[in-house]
Length: 103
Image (cartoon, rainbow, N blue to C red; front, side):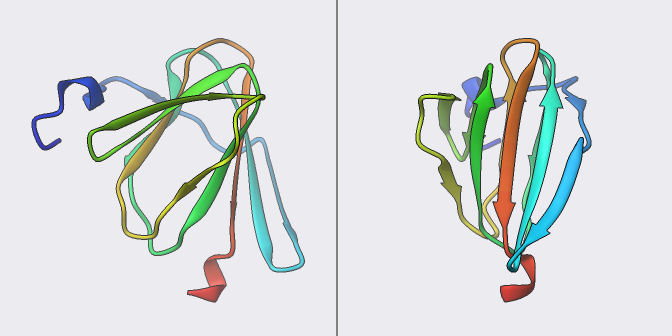
């Protein structure tokens, strides 16, 4: 990962969305994760925003780590940019919002 030791994470347990729904063209994926679980390094063809509704999580991308919780503004992640999301505590709920069909 470009020599960024703070970004290297191995053995993250991948979680699937607990709830998924579409509203007026926007897809929402709601994840429930415990410490160490999340979405390992990946990228996709669409941008999305990530919001943490409960607990806390870290978003890593290209040499940057950002810890978010329910008091933090949503984080915007660009299309075709690798990133990963990891829960920092049990009971974390985070939401990804995107409009995949618009790209």
